Amino acid sequence: MKTQINIYFGLIILLTFLASCGGKKEKETKELIKPVKFQEVSYAHGGTNRTFLGTARSNKEINLSFRSSGILTTLNIAIGQKVNKGDLLAQLDNTEAILSLEQANASLNSAKSSLNTATSALNRTRTLFEKGSASLSDYESAKSRFVDAQANYQSALRSVEIRKKQVAYGTIYAPSNGIIASRKVEINENVNAGEVVANLNAGSFMEIRLGIPENAINRVAKGMQVVINFPSLENSVFNGMVSEVSPSIDANTSTYPVRIKIENATKEIKSGMAANVVFTFDNLLQDEELIVPITAVGEDSKGNFVFIIISTDGKTGTVQKKHFAIKELTNSGFIVKDGLKIGEKVATAGLQTLLDGQKVRLN
Image (cartoon, rainbow, N blue to C red; front, top):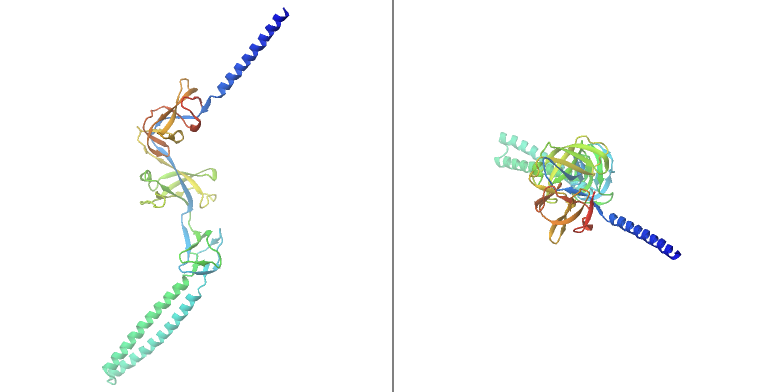
């Protein structure tokens, strides 16, 4: 009897243990159902927003450079410095140009003296010729010497003007009021002609400069309103207006340069800040075309694919790998050429960890 009781209690303990393990196993099985985010394949209706990356700039930026080469001897430039029009900013060692100017001035003085002498001689010879005391040959010779002296004087005068310009080429004065945005050189450096030594922000307002691809440039027009935000300025949104649209493509970026005036700019916007510019294009895509999110599309040896979620209760389902054809990529997603239907649910995250036929939970 005691033995039967012991067996009875042993069976109870065993069944309890098995039930516990079964519950635990069932719980672990439930936890293995992967949650996935999804979106539905949809039509592209009405206006479409597209975002392009741009850079904040002053509307007037001047690259300061010399028109001659030499050693930099004067540099009155500091980043952030306010300057006024006409301020001396930088100067080269102009010793050779100054010597050339001095020689040109000496030649000019000599030519002027010769012209004065030739003028006096011509006037005297003319008077004598009119009185009959000088021959026609003497008079013609005096006129010829005067013409030569006059030509030499004009040549010397032009030479002085050229030498003055060469001296001026070694000096940079502020062309406008503004703020120094950058400095590229240091004192005593050998600077080449045309080399940018500093950048001057001389504009009256801030703008965004960006490039628009050829598939969207015909939707952009001067006066178009846009919305601007800066990743570095959180919770700040600015209004903008397209002020310039280039008719030709930039060979370096393969885009069309566009400028946008920031209408409600603040001092927090600094030159060089990255900006997101949102354009709203009407009927950018045909209404009958389907769009699939960029994050839902993968690619393998067979081409582009998505994971379709097949669900009956809207809570759980299974994924099915499905290849399809695309037409082009837009900022809203891929335009579907063939292979997908309206309303199909596609997984938008974790494509690398999903398996064909895997059970998932819609998230």
